[in-house]
Amino acid sequence: MESIAQNPWAALAYLVAGVCFILALRGLSSPATSQRGNRAGMIGMTIAVVTTLVTHVPRIAPPCPTGAICENYGTPVLDTLTLVELLAAIGIGAAIGIVTARRIAMTAMPQLVAAFHSLVGLAAVLVAGAAFLNPGAFGIASDGVIFLQSRIEMGLGVAIGAITFSGSVIAFLKLNGNMGGKPILLPGRHAINLGVLAAILGLIAYFTQDQSPWIFWTVTALSFAIGFLLIIPIGGADMPVVVSMLNSYSGWAAAAMGFTLHNSAMIITGALVGSSGAILSYIMCRAMNRSFLSVIAGGFGGDAGGGPSGAAAVDRPWKRGSAEDAAFLMSQAEQVIIVPGYGMAVAQAQHVLREMADKLKAHGVRVKYAIHPVAGRMPGHMNVLLAEANVPYDEVFELEDINSEFAQTDVAFVIGANDVTNPAAKTDKSSPIYGMPVLDVEKAKTVLFIKRSMGGVGYAGVDNELFYRDNTMMLLADAKKMVEEIVKSLD
Image 1 (cartoon, rainbow, N blue to C red):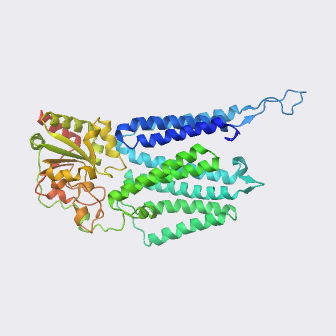
Image 2 (spheres, helix red, strand yellow; image 1 turned 60 degrees about the vertical axis):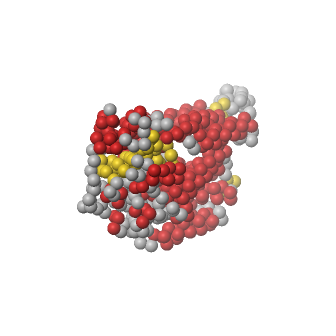
Image 3 (cartoon, rainbow, N blue to C red; image 1 turned 135 degrees about the horizontal axis):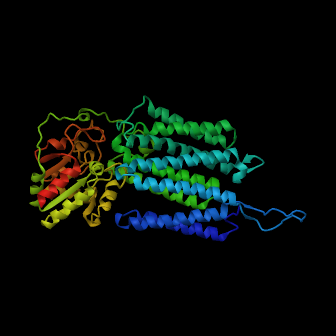
């Protein structure tokens, strides 16, 4: 195996790949530059993979002819069999990724991201396990004794990887509807979590002094368990933050694999993903009025009680409108603010929504889009959907940039959003979403709210008192069908 120190071109290639990854993160910070960022990331990953194959595929000496002096015979060549195996594995993975990407619906993107995070975590566990069972093959041992720094890297890598895997599995099940969105509160969960985390850290410290197999595998088992325990108590309204945090964990798991494999590209990539995911989680926690430390500890969505807001109050009086009513009100408005949510994603209504906005602009109406940081099921979910429908970027605004405009807006058009527009977050201390900043849509002169029926509640499991306000008109129908009818009425 050729080391990077012996091949300066490999070090340069990894440096170029790292720069591409940094440019990718910069590009992904804005919808307007996201395609360029994706391309930079793809180029960087291609460079990293090719460089790794060239420098890490074993080389073997050619067979010695019979009767020849075979000491140092011939120039070592690539182990063709190993190269074929690696290329076959890459091909299988690429095929699975391409088929999945082409078939997956945008509504299922959050659970797909969670599933990918789990695979990164599992890969870290498998690499750490292989390194522990055969440290000589990884160059991290002498006479069977694993180096001290390698034990630290291995212990942290298997712990982070196992937590990422099991936590991502629970996140996937919750996002995919296999588990309920309500928190599952275990008695004494905080004490249990702290105890398990303390045991993991203590055993990793002990592992640096004694490399007995029971220590390594106990750390692995406890880490799998704490991943489940940390995510199970978290409610549905907080899942976007969880996805972001698991993204950070997967990055640190990849960095740990990089240390074990002596691969600087993986270390750079993992550190970038881990740090950027942590920063994004911190930003989202601020947007939701949550504690960053409570995200790491787990269960931050589970203490609020469900109180009186926990059930839909469908017996209260409310106003029902039609597509014709909505079309008339919006065509007469000076400004309409559209608030998209997960219901828009489920109905795949983003394209017809943009068509409706275009017709409103043709009537002289000023149209803007208001995006809550945690609308949908993962960070940026609504931005991706609107970009897919070619909505102009300069019409899309984040909560802090547009919230003050609702009071001067004629119509707020809410399509599929619920928890992020619920005024109870500002007034009802018993609500699970209390303290979360929400869009002030209730301040608009008229609120048009598309919802399938009055019987359902949001992902957080609470009713929205906005439905029953005097200035709210409910449009009960499938979001896409209702918007299509509004478009016809605008004609």
